[in-house]
Image (tube, rainbow, N blue to C red; front, side, top):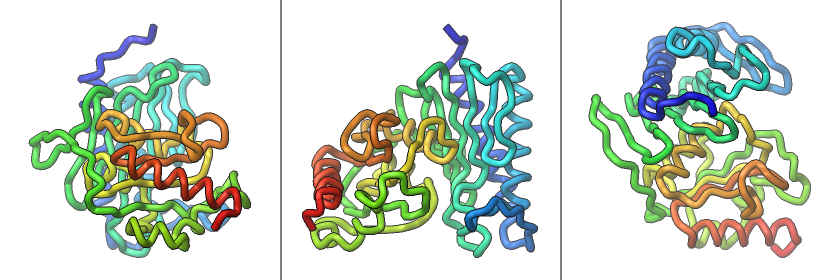
Length: 271
């Protein structure tokens, strides 16, 4: 079995996310060079600098662990039991447009399980984190338990590609579903900070297409929501990272059931 200490690993995830968040915050508003990735995607100098700061923290403390970084790719043994998943700036398009809706995500997969994770908001100074057992929010050095709630009715839908389940399912079509607008309030913020918000009770749910195993974007948020007690499944209600993939995270089973029904209706053509 791989060696781990959930508490110390969780604090390391928090420290790494905070290091990245400090860089993102300090470079905000500057004229930043871009590295084109193709398909309309790009990284900024802030993405690259934040990832370096995060990796310095992780490799300094855990030199034998493998890492997958959004910008630097894979380092360490391919089949490593311990692998850190790093997204230094989730919401790059927002950030480049001087919009503060971004997140810094750090997660640790041990074996097949994402054991600990942290998602930092560089501009509020908040860090949502979990040791795998409980989910907490750290603000000004003080921790509080996260409590999911569907009271807001706000549901974030990710409409960024890829869309592996198209044309049967397209997330953007959920926004036009009459029942969606009648019973929920759709939002599109284009950052996985919104996944952490489900765990924190600031969103009722989050929906995305895609194959998300070992996703540097989603691993932290999924771990947070599971630890907080949210309902977390794939697009068809199946275990995550199986079948069609995708993700539906909801604060409660009622909201999750409604979203499953809307997805099923769309795929069957019953609109």
